[in-house]
Structure formats: C-alpha cells, structure tokens
Length: 553
Image (cartoon, rainbow, N blue to C red; front, side, top):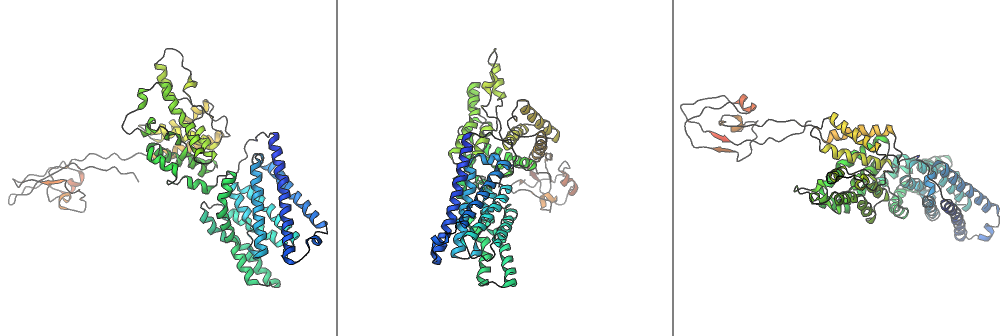
C-alpha cells in the first residue's frame, strides 16, 4: 500500500489522452459483454429463451446507460483527484482488470455455488495494496454499484438486490481499514476472516425477520466468503504485480530478506557496503516515517542504493580490509570515473534482476550531480591550470522523489559521522546540517517536492539515529593484577572472581611474600596484606586481564 500523494501535475500528451479514451471505452464494452454473457448463461441453465429475455430493450438500455455513468464517474474522479495516476493508461487498465476479474468470480460463485459466498471485498483488497487507501475506497463503491447492476440484470435470485450493495460496501471498508496494515500475504489471509462479518450479520437478521430457505448453507457460505477473499487475493496478487509493474509491501518485504539473491551477493562480495546499507536503511526508514513517506520503500531503496559497487567492490574504502587502496596508483580522472559509475551500474543491475524501477531510480539519483571533492582536490594538486569541477561530479539526475532525497542525505551523513573522532550530539548535528546545507546550495533538491519543514524534520531524525548508532562508551582503566595470594577472592574462587583458565601460573614454594596493594579496586577491598611465618604461602603471577568494553545501558 502506497502513501497518498498530491504531487505536481504532470503534463499530458495527446497520446496519453487517446490511450485513456481507448481504455475506458473498450472496458465499458467488455463489462457490458460480461453482463450479457451472464444473462445468456442464466437463460441457458434455466431453459429460458435468451431472445425473448432480451426482447424488452428497456432492460439492456437501462444497463448500458448506468454503466456509462459508472465509467464516466471513474474518469472524472481520477482526472480531478489523481491525474498523475490516470496519466498512465496502464494504471486505468489495471483498475478495470481487477473489477472484471472480481465480477467474473462473483458471478460464477453466486450462480453455481452460493450467492453469499461471493468475495465482494476482493476489489477493495486488490486496489488497496496496488495503489492506496483513497483509491481503494472509491473503487469499492463503484464495484458495489456494478454488482448491483449485475444482480438486477441477470435476475440472480437475490431477494433484496440492494443488500448486495450494503454487504459489498461494508465488507470492502472492513478490508481496507482492518486488513490494510498487514504486511505478509498469509497475514492478509488470516485477517480476511473478519470480512465475513457483514454477510453473517445480514443473514442472521434476515432469517429472524422473515426466514431464509437453506439458512444453514447460506450462513456457512457467508462465513466463508471472507476467507475465500483472502485466498483469492493471496493467489493472484503476484500476477497483478508482475503484469502491471506494481510494487506492493509484500514485494518490498521479500526484497529486504537477506536470502534474496542480490543481498546475498552484496554480503559475500562487498561486506563493508552491506554494513553501511544496513545502518542507512534504519536511518532512511525513520526519516520516511517522520515525513509521511513509504517507510518500507525507503528501507528497500537503502538496501540496494549502492548495489552498483558490486562491479568493482575493492575500489571503495569500506571494502578495503587490507589497507591497500587501488586509487593510489590511478589518475584522479580514472578514479572519478570508477567511483561515479556505481550509480549507473546499480541502475542497470537492479533492472537486470527484475527489481522495481523505483529502486533503480534511487540508485541513479542518490548522488545527484554532487562533486567528488576528494579527487577534485587531488586533480588540482597535479595541475597549475583551472580544473572543471563538472568532470569530477556525478552524472545525475538529481533526486526526483522525497525518498531519493532522504537516501542522499542519510548516505552522506552516515559516511561523514563515521569518520568523526568526537561523535557527541553537537558534533553530529553540525555535520548533518552542513551536509544538508551544501546539497541545498548545489541545488540537489530542486527537482523533488521536499520542503524546508521536511528537511528540518529529516535533520533531527538523522541526528537522533546517528547518535544512537555511534553512541559514547565508558572508558575503562587498564588493570594490572600482580602478587595476589590465594586468600584473595579473585584467586580462591570467590563470587566476584571471573578469571579465565590458564591465566594463573603458580611458582615454586619459597619464602612468603607480602601481598601488594597496587591491584584493582576489587582486590584492595577484599585482600589484606599478611605475613605468615608458620606456613609458607604459595604466590602466583597473574597476567593482565583483558577488560571488555560494555555498552552503556
């Protein structure tokens, strides 16, 4: 499920207008054909002459006019409410395909099984995860009107035809608001059981009011309709994703699984890049949540934003474990070409593996047209003339979406803060604000709709995230334990003794030695200096104990 966006209006071409007209007209005729076909099947199974049934032209004419109104309302709604969505005729075709598929399923189950088994919330569920909540509510209403027309035209046997309108609308709204927050396919199937509630309530009230024939069969079918809706959704959502190129939360969750092919490759071939991406994904997700963007998409984009480094992982500092930098032997121009090519390489690699274009775009845009200052400075040292900074900058384009802008900011901030010696909150804040200011000065956010208010929110979120990742630690003193006797709890196995085996080396028995008091604070409290004349004591030498640093809690 995607976030609802207003967005700047895109320019329509004559081709866009023509394709949308064709899509709406063709699908109007297709839906009319489905209604006529369903009437023919009814006549055939009931032994009625289809010719006589259609002799009264008022019924098909009434149906045709009402369908024109429904389709016209759809066109008007999308044109004024989500014109950018409607601009792509593929999106309009997706909505019609979902409706036509649901009409076929509802008719077949209502005709040959039980009319109360129909998955009336199926359209609401599909459009919710393929588009957004606002579109799902609208399409649910239109589909319920279509079901009402189908019941009226085909004489389906539903005593009160308008009950299908009420049942379908309430079931769809339950699906939108109670199932829409689930991010696993099986979770949707489990929650979809509650979609049956309106059907069961209606059947129960109708039975007590005037009695229903075959009440038991009807109540079982009604109670199963919600589960059937979830099963059909589970079975066909992947097909709609692939056919229409949509990215659902289920697809994104699968892409962030560490078992996915590209992620496994990054872990194996570029472990430093992978660790950087993990930290970045947490920051990007927090920023997206803070400004109301799709947090799961932001997290997925962060995972894959540097996937282009797989082509030459050893040329990037985070993957250079042996302290050998290949750029030391290269010219600044060649180094720049290698570094900036990872954006284009990532774009191509993501598309090659069939990942969503939204992720590929972030790979291409997350550095914008920023200069690579290190090699630009290196080039200036090698020449006395002017150096064109454009030759040492990324190719672009600049971020086109807020999520691409978030990845750009988080990427630069995480890398900069990692190099700081002082990672206090004040130091981190100064670095983050400078990075955002530099990118604003270079016009990196000019082509996306991010606001100053949202940038301030992102700055605060990034600072909070980075200070949590690179938090300060307690600096423990180095302890030197020497000459501790057996009577000390540290040696004799007291409760506070935590000495690894092999650290105590007993010496030969000689003259008793006074115990030194220069040991650790624990030993000073528990061991007192003694000199025993009657019986010689064993002295031990203890190696320096390594003290593990522990995080502050």
